[in-house]
Image 1 (cartoon, rainbow, N blue to C red):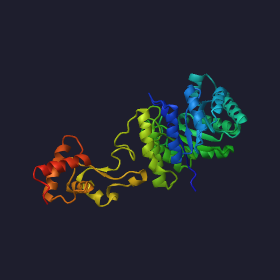
Image 2: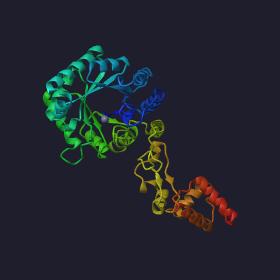
Image 3: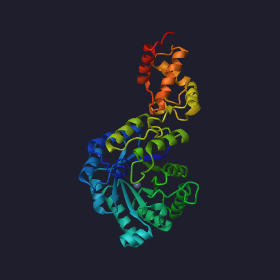
Image 4: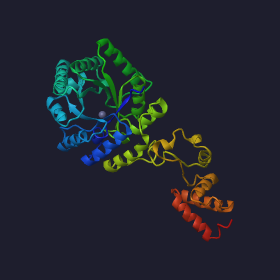
Length: 387
Ligand SMILES: [Zn+2]
């Protein structure tokens, strides 16, 4: 029985990408697709930041999606009031607990912070006992472990349901002494000793390129919720990529609970309205994700896709593509000719066409089906095409 839940933060963390802002009608379009895919929580903004964000959250909560809509909030009663006004079912509060930040920035000691966390969580629960509360000790993994535990215990005893481990700066590295797997186990065992049993979430930033690997480490160590965003959008290098996370959980860990075929549409939508392009080599989603190019690869992939593909493209509503350029061989040309109804071309014609394809490829272009038709016509007008 699967227990893992996914929180998508494209509309909150993703909006922290420089220049990205989603209008309320686009927020709804994105949330609707996330809901159809089967995402459990949609974190859609910090309502006190901007009136339109609050408006967007209010519209999402009244749109009858199955996903629970979540708001971000500082550990302040006025933020909680704004969040509760929108009707969200989930509020994520955060407060740092590192001595360096507390002394240098906030001029507070840990006991004052614990009191503020307890009071704020209890206030939210008093106003709405149904609302799910997540507490995040910001920059969890670089903060004093003792403070993380104290703050988590205070939050849970005041009513918090979830404690989120934030790798705010993308600091964790798998296989080293600061790996996420061991961190999760250590925190879980400490919580057990303290007599608390909250759900555990994980929020991994991608500064070192390990966000997905750290999230999978956390999954293996038994976390309940993993944060992700479309196209990894977020502060700096962003967070865990949603499609890559779902793919690994689905294909490699047997969590077959999402409709992955809608991811392509979701990524195109987010890319269009965020202005962030999808690189062609983006796993699963990019134009080249299921495209075979080199002659040897194409020949083998045409015979049987598994030779050079470990992910079935139809899971994503896509199909294997063979590209024609200077790397192509006869098998690729034959395959592409058969796709456009010219499989009967003579060997001589195929060679002429292959030479033309290679010539175009050396100019840095790829021949698509339409151009291949033009090449066939050009060859015919030069005396080819006679079987
Ligand atoms: Zn973040």
